[in-house]
Length: 287
Image 1 (cartoon, rainbow, N blue to C red):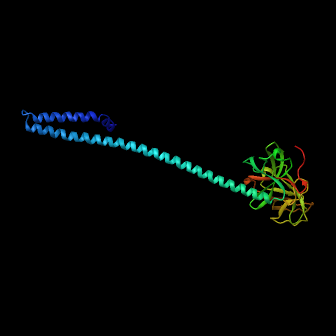
Image 2: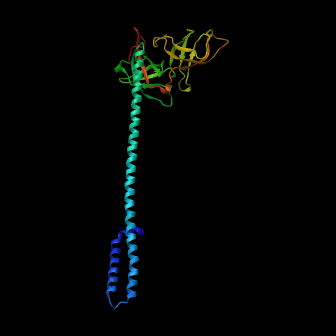
């Protein structure tokens, strides 16, 4: 506050010093004044002038420093904003690269599929339940119909996803093989015993293979594929591998054959809807 006051009124202080100096010189020229008095006046005024000059200079330097500090702060803020913009641009570039790679991957895989398919992206699903139904961005306008089978590629593996259960003009709902109410004709890939894959829904990340004859020699890791029975799913599409099972003394079938799906539904983004295999259709006509 003191420096601010001195800086604000420095002109008046300097003027006062000059007045004192003028008075001192007038006294010095006067013959009636004692020489000692003249010397005392000059000695008194000189330090005061130095103090005022030093204070004025210090005050001016102080305010100049404040202005420089403001400029530095503004430059720092501007630099940070530019840095954030660059970070955002780099993130966008990386996302575009990933998206291009993903699209290239899906298009290359579509060429490998022996069926006529429509590529689709998942546009809505329940993030708390990967095993419930989800929505894709293809519908009636693209020829999608109820009960069309849906598959996907992850890594180098093609696996069963589920089937279409609802269709609108530009989108469709898919019931995954893991969902409640999902039943798929299945068989052991090596043993050729047939059964049915049943979805367990949110309660489990696996499905259950039922009606496998107890005479079959099942092993952990055995592959389960679609049987082609039922007229919806083509034969031979991978469903999953055996996680566990329970043999029974009585009855005709194994109990609780747990199958881990080939497809990781938590990472599923893209799917392929199958129209037909050769001349056979795998969907029901209708809306």
